[in-house]
Length: 181
Ligand SMILES: [Zn+2]
Image 1 (cartoon, rainbow, N blue to C red):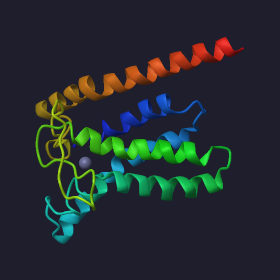
Image 2 (image 1 turned 120 degrees about the horizontal axis):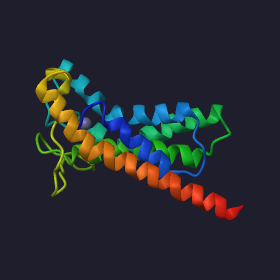
Image 3 (image 1 turned 180 degrees about the vertical axis):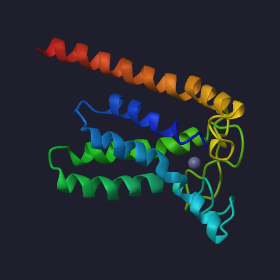
Image 4 (image 1 turned 60 degrees about the vertical axis):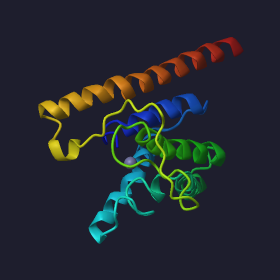
């Protein structure tokens, strides 16, 4: 996995690119939480589930089906209480945030691949290009030379492209809004 600092940054880019609606701050937080949700499978270690199992790390919780189910369940619950934002918009945003986790994991250089099509297929996938380091920051700490080096790599390879994408999307949106007036 990329570190827990870097997965949520993708929610910023997804939200900025995806919707013209002004998302309230709590939806950005929810999107960031969804980028971390797939790693809930780490809890399986506590009950003896192995990495390569369907319920193991990068298994079912990293699949497209899990992302769709989580987005539907969470999005429909939230939008029922907040009708000001469209259901389709919120569910799609949360789906993209959740699925982004597996996509980033499939860009990492170590471990097993991602079971995007679980539970229908247990095959694990990586992208052919894997520029991201696996981040054991939880074990080695941020304030160690290795932790700092890993964070710097993630900053260059995840944060900068995500923030750049968000910035460009916001600029294009501002220009479009001005032209409409
Ligand atoms: Zn993961």
